[in-house]
Amino acid sequence: MASRGRIALLAVGVTAGVILLFVGTVWVLMRVMDEGGLPGGSRVAIVEVNGIIGAGLDGGTDTDMIVRELGEYRDNPTIVAIVLRVNSPGGLVGPTQEIFSAATRVREAGKPVVASLGSVAASGGYYVALAANRVYANPGTLTGSIGVVMQLANAEGLLKKVGVDYVVVKAGAYKDIGNFARTMKPEERKVLQALLDDVYGQFVGAVADRRSLDRQTVMGFADGRIYSGQQAKALKMVDELGGLEDAIEAAAKLAGIVGKPKVIYPRRRFSLRELLRNQVGLGDISAILPALPSLKTPLYLMY
Image (cartoon, rainbow, N blue to C red; front, top):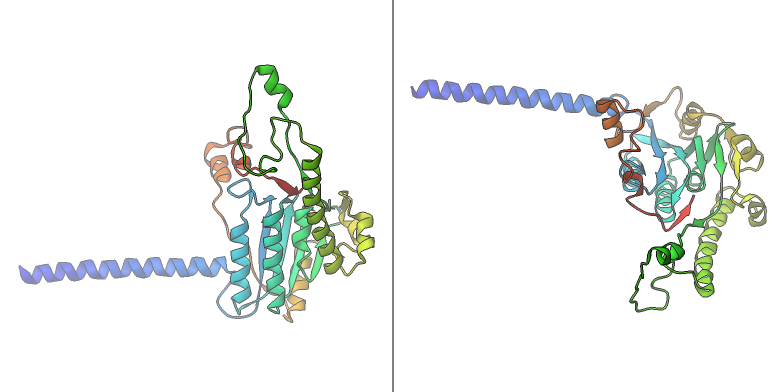
């Protein structure tokens, strides 16, 4: 009986070992497929900036994930260049600057960064592209929109009409600045305007510095207008006209890769919107998930 017990335990151990080996092999194969090929060699990684920057969740770009991804590729010796693929109309100021800084650190580490502007790379989307060594845009890409905007509602008239009295108790003269229940005071508007002017100055300065343009020249087109990729090239906002493949080839060339480069494509991320679209068969579920894009309400935007 004891012998049978030992045999049974041995069989269980062998089975468990085989299962673990199988799972480990599958995991390694998935990692290899995810990273674009077998380990070794010089590779170009693509990092995507999609949707509204700073929206998070399913409503736009996950800033923390992009910053972490850029940091991992910066420290990975097999990654020699990065293509920043931008499809974004802009977003929150802080998260935009975080992505810009993370991409800049990749450059400072000696790895070239090439930006590839997709359908839209405007405002904050264009800002993050400024971190690149070279910027590619399609002729019809919508870009530019260099500016900062703050959007605040005033519901004072509505509240009075329905008989609602909104009471605020505060310590600090400007603590309730932007209160939707009353008209903004002139001195409050000056405070907010100074804030936006400061951030706008940072944006203009980044364009002038990264595009090697005179600040006054930048001020001539940095008035919030959008431009096509072709117009942007004429204004020296971008370097070349071309798509993603052109940007990949440029990144490989800057990194000294001879021949066709190995490419690490963007990691697939879980998307609640895509899951419901696939499982429920809905083409657009924004009507039943209205809160997702608005869980983080922006105060001021490069948008």
